[in-house]
Length: 194
Image (cartoon, rainbow, N blue to C red; front, side, top):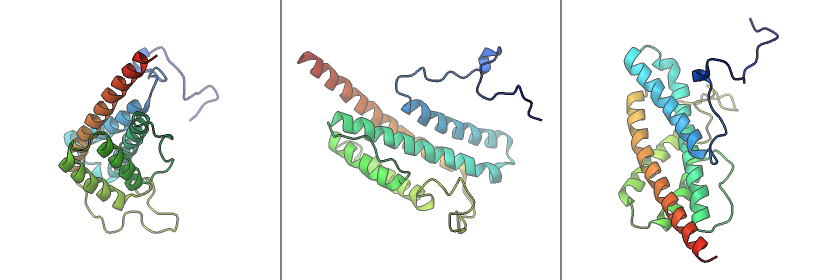
């Protein structure tokens, strides 16, 4: 049972189990990749051991959705910085709306890059948004009205979800790398004018 001297967020002598926080100047990528890696590890565990997929489907899909949301918000934030557009990103969980903003920024930054891949990503994010538009469906079994969160869905292949999320992740990571490279060039150019 919990004891008076128990604490959750402390460091211990077994340093290999101590997670390091706040060491990165910009933690967006760290947060996003942490959610994706956690989901991937859970799917890998199910592939190797099986048996818990009916219970773990909810945290796995929540983790993947959270990854997408953070990755997209970071791309919006960085894309707007690159294009000198004020503001960060919308503070909501509307993944379809966030992706729409992000997609437009990516098209403005690199108009002819990955057109077909972006179209397929539109479709896949739209599929996720249709099932879980506001990041609640995989967190709660009912919505705020008491209706089932996932009506009509009977089966989800988690290996397939992981594989498709990996493809989406590759596209988002590549876009992030491109934006980061352009930001570095922009910074060098601005430094040269001072």
